[in-house]
Image (cartoon, rainbow, N blue to C red; front, side, top):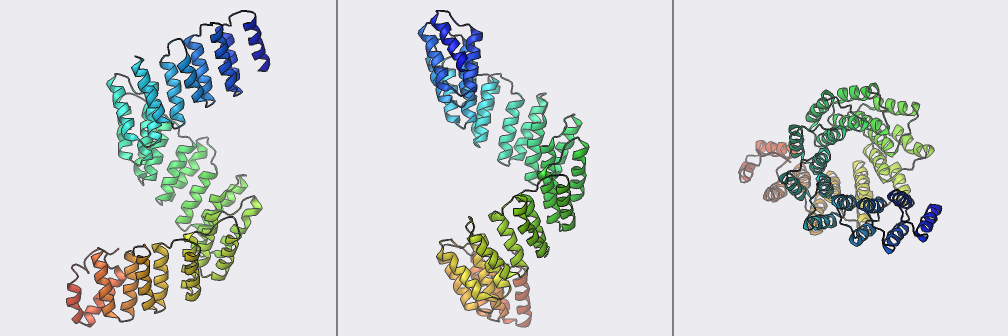
Length: 504
């Protein structure tokens, strides 16, 4: 490239005027090497000798600078150019600005070109619409879309894909479908990207039936789904527990000439674990290894969580400690699923050892970790230890949430320590944590169990004032109370619909 730049200099020294091919080749080469200042130098030298730059050369200069993300220099050159700018110059700059998230700057350029009498084309509008959708500024994106149509400019595939993606990002699947239908009505054929965006959005919103309809339409239109499309639908099916259909789709991926990847396996493994089909999950894991696919952290987290939930702690531990042997280190979420499995299955000592290991790692335990430990120690009746862990939360500056307060209240109630549980209910509110339906149901159940009916009634009244309703357990105890002692019927009737309302 240096040699080429030297030859260009020699041409200039000898008084020859470089032609379009020479300048274009040099600028492209300099841009590829990221030599921004050299590009500007070429422009300055051409200007000094009175070289009449053309729209094409100017376009090459602007495009080259934008491609290497030197948009500021591109705009500067654009301002200094003698020949008139055209829609292509503006289009390149607006596209580059939108791609980098500088949409407001792009809009300024848009109005500048309008002011100069240069009319935008579909490429300019599509860039702005895509940029605005990327920032979730859908209202403005739709306004530009309507303006474009009002100018008689037909939207193309890129425009529609941008709008559909924008609505999907916001979970507005009905609006996305409406745009999709409009696109079909305009005779524009969706591509794989269009279908994949819609399928992914519908699956994430739990609309798997609609996603399958879009998938079937895709096939009917002769568009072959790619792996991303299949993985999106696969994920939706597994989340909804439609494992039979997920298995068929998983097997059909290979039939379509595609190669399943780690993501595909992770989705299926998660589906099996969620449905308590642990044997099938581990079978897929072993199949991954046989095929030479390397499991990632998501694979291990899913399996550890699945085995923990199934009570197979030994296998969960084996997988946890196997991770370093395959080049993976447990991350915070890995510790969390392992701790959860240990605590839920009564392996509190091992959970405490793992907690110490976590504290000595680069990860800081969060409130979720502490909640699990408090729950685990409460489950096995080690209330004093639970208290110490709870107090440690405050000491290290973490803010207890309603979940951990509820766990602690439940632990105290089970031990019959109702006065302390009641004090904690008051304390949590004083600390800015508002008790929820579970808080009240837990403590009311505790007082009813200990036959402290008056206190239970006081709390029930407070609960009602917050528009909470008793759960099934409390409702059953209240009904039993009325049957045993009719004196409480009046008290219950003073709480309108307490036995009829839906519990939380």
